[in-house]
Image (cartoon, rainbow, N blue to C red; front, side, top):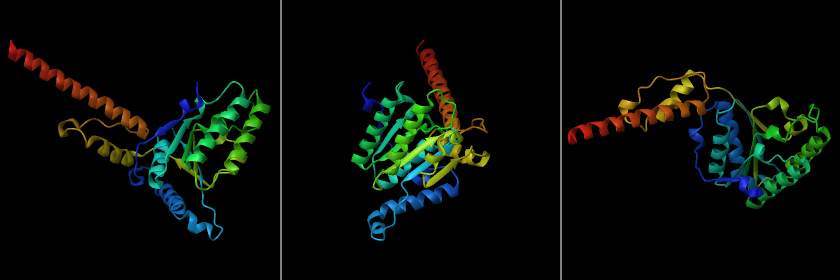
Length: 243
């Protein structure tokens, strides 16, 4: 498979205001975005902008959406890659592939979003059977991150923060934790999802103690079932009227 077939050039535009997570996280992101908007001015004072962000926490709670919103706010392309698709049996080949992805993002001055970062950032003290090879891979990643230019932005996401090598963790100036939404946060999200559907379909039982992604899947599945049921009923009525 061609390496670039693994890359997703996503054009979806998401506003930061639409993100559903803590105010602390929002404050950190807004500051980062402001720094990048005034990148050249800050350079005059030898001030480096934060351009390495690690998003960690529960699956389905908005890490990918956050990366897309940052790219939208900065008017940059986003290069998305799920690292589980990039891992090669020969770790040396994986290092080569990862470097090619970094080079692509740097050329385009893009936002590089690496999902499932733990796939290539495992601790060098782990019990992995290929410890020596994994150490070389992590060393390669450290070098790529250290030389990543400030006019690009690196965002990595993981559900397994504690498995990431500590030397890699130190490279990220910003680390944002994503928590499972509480009942009030889910109600706000449900309201946003349901408003686009007919009013008489909106009164559905609401599930809690689930992620935003799970809530979205639940709403969409329920709506499809209800809409199809109504369409089938209309067809049955029409068939009876024609008899």
